Image (cartoon, rainbow, N blue to C red):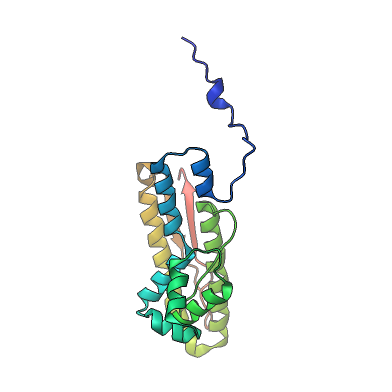
Length: 201
């Protein structure tokens, strides 16, 4: 029996209609109420203003205290946190970060893939470790502390890799994680240890 799948393969044709928001699009195209509700929940949970409110609460600040730090009123803070992101300014986000003594990072564009995210973090880790090594070679008082940190960081990273390897199909049995410690010259930090994943080893 031959089934005609041509309809499912063809992409939807543009209707020519334009909408000012996702909500208007869904209503105009007759999307079910259940789907509209789920999309609204996702949009609400990803609001930057909601995240700012949660940040304020996590550090124990009231709206009144934050308003005082921002030089505004409690009602203005309340309106900001209950509103949307369209009118939010970078200055307001900066005030929240400063008042809560926290860092806030913003990223615009398509989401990173898991591989891109891991590669980005690995590059950042390498940069900071190299800077710590440079500081240790210039400051004898900090050398011992930095060397201890290097050891802890190495085994923490190795532990993460091993734990994640166990979650691979078949427990990652075809991948070997091993390391080699290279002895350093007297008075200097150890050279970079190697940590390699070997497929089929």
